[in-house]
Image (cartoon, rainbow, N blue to C red; front, top):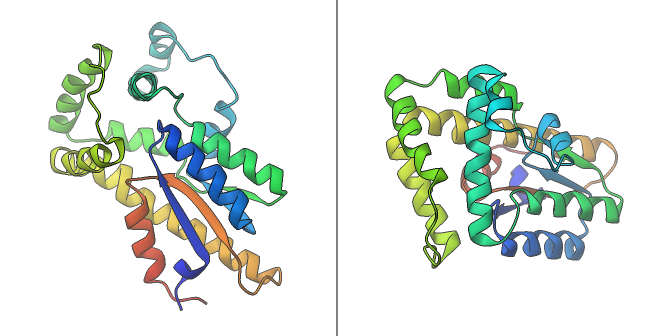
Amino acid sequence: MSYLRYVRLIGTMHVSPQSREEVIRTILSERPHAVAVELDRARFLAMGEERRLSLEESLRFGRRGLVNYVLAKVEEKLGEEFGMKPGEEMKAAISAAQLLGVPLYLIDEDIGVVLSKILAAPGREKLLMALEALSVFLPVKSGQFSDPMEDYRVMMLQFKRRYPYLYRVLVEERNEIMARNLISIVDELRRRGIRKPRVIAVVGLGHRPGIEHILNNVKLR
């Protein structure tokens, strides 16, 4: 019996209103023993801060600050296109867990470690990422995304081909970390006397298949 039996993963687009609604509906209807989200402590605390650093302020933190600024702008631009602030589905999961009174777990890798890995990317991938990042600051044509979920899957495949190193550290390695944390959550719930724990994990759409594969191949201890 694998750990996947006790964990249900909701794969979301971080800027999709449909994802937020699915998260709320699923958690409240299934009433799990625990909820897990694709966040680390730093990002969890930052979600309560409405103000983002300006480019000038970000540059004071060096290359890490610049990378963080560009990533934030990417999410902001997509949020404008889909009519939703980035991270709303994570906030919905947190609120639903609080409403049910069940534990909330942060299962993602520390953002500082993630940024260090990004900065260690090969020169070719850094240059390509810098060039493509320029398009983030250009207007996005309305109606460009006919099927957001399908477009997201295509974007992930393209990202894997163009950025093999970044795909490994941003997707595959984080899949392993989040799966390992979910295994620990199930084990903890069972130690507390819950024979058949139910855990709902809210993660990005691109992470769901990899995490499910890992959980399905680890036998229950």
